[in-house]
Image (cartoon, rainbow, N blue to C red; front, top):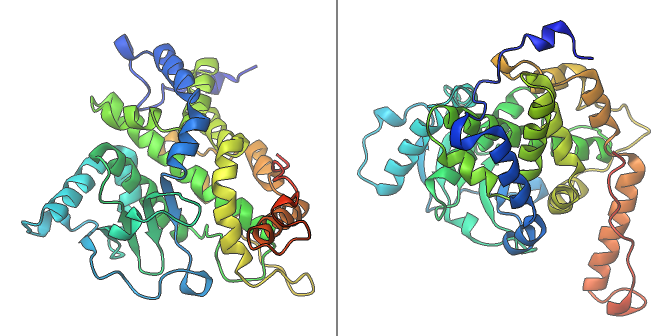
Length: 356
């Protein structure tokens, strides 16, 4: 039974308005849209964001020469006739029109972070995926693919700015230290799920203010649909319970097989290139209570990092999961190179679902 305190919570700011766009109508749209999830993941295969690893694990050694950039927080003071610069300035202004957008972008002001159009994001990765945006922590830069629509880029700016904010609160799966690979995997998926949640909340706020385009865009994106469906379903069940709505979204990300299959190979490649965990040495902790509580703090919406969600997060990926998935990846790589006993006919272990 819900407590009296939760019953008295005010509706989530940015909640889906009534009228032609009711909660139920959006729930229907999200569920019908989810029917194309697998097809969407196949066709677009990774039209998503990323946190770029440092040079020692495969990141760039220098910046591209053809970047078009603004410094976040100084856009209105910078005069330019360059259409790309003008677009970036307009994107920041639009992102700052929401409370959540101002919150995450505000964390970047004063730190000199830049927002840039990077043509390199037009090039598919080795598995054929394309990035909408990326946070380059080692160059303090947020990158965008220059061929995307404004609605997509607005949400991407908020998403990638949240990655910057995560680094500031010490959530970083690539952090130097003696950390078990399984804990790095958990930190990696949590970073992505949390950034998506922030982008969804910002789009909800824009929707409530009359700008429906960002939420329409996210509703049509197969990589966002599982979290949005979970949020709407939970809001229908527990009206006004901000924390339950946000926690459901975080869980939905990890419970989506399509999203784990899309992102886990990326995370594994980066983590696998880092120095391996040495159990004989002192262990460093990434996901302390302090870090998790800082991540879950969503300002006026409350803190979604409940005790139940902490347990879900910490149990979501085990050392055995890492060994199993690493074995499957190694087998697939050897089969690709023709180094297996049975060549292309070699049967590799399947990629298991995470323990959660």
